[in-house]
Image 1: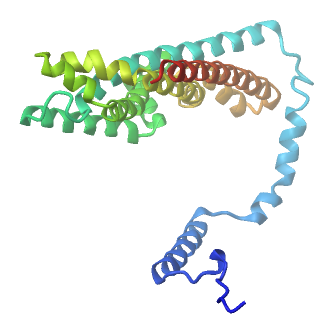
Image 2: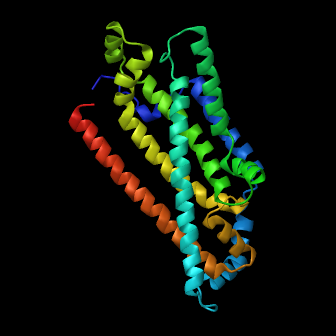
Image 3: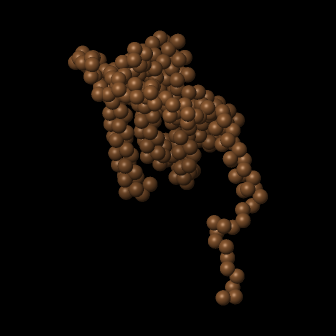
Length: 281
């Protein structure tokens, strides 16, 4: 009874630094809100336009019947979108893996040329990752013209930046004892990398690649809005012509494609993780 009751942890006095951090956080939020243009009046005051869109979009194809030729064209464009995403991702993974090898710390030794190669590779990976894919799409549309090729190149560049970073980190996080043992027997750094480090990092490579594919499928749909091929070009055209009912059909097809790829990717990742656990990796 004489023991002094302790204040519950949630009521303990915070430090001056924590107090100032909370104040700074709220000031940043107020500053961001002020510049974001967020407005409840505009959001709820546009109900008339939202209602007009919904009335014209649903049910889909109510006034103008969707012909089989139109639907077949949408399916072909959806297939083109998937082709862009798959091959662009594959190309990006191959090149990104090479960049990751050069960017990984210590894989090629600690000589000055090796360090310079690492710095240059990391810079290029960062450069490709930080520029938005829509900007790359606009650049490639100007270079190679409208169509799927521009979209494929955009996806490849975006994938290089995405997987290059994570591949490099996965190789750096691998336990080096096996590689050091191989090197002690007279093998080169390159031999130990391909014999020990890359096999140990392979499950991470595969899961990262699957995430990259999901990302590419979602991104390839948007790239068409700037003329980089795929079904996004058709969607942009339908919105420009205010054919909202047909646009809803295209959005539904896009949703099915993305959902299908995500489900396949999730299933593959679970299988890879189960295999890694059973093998003791």
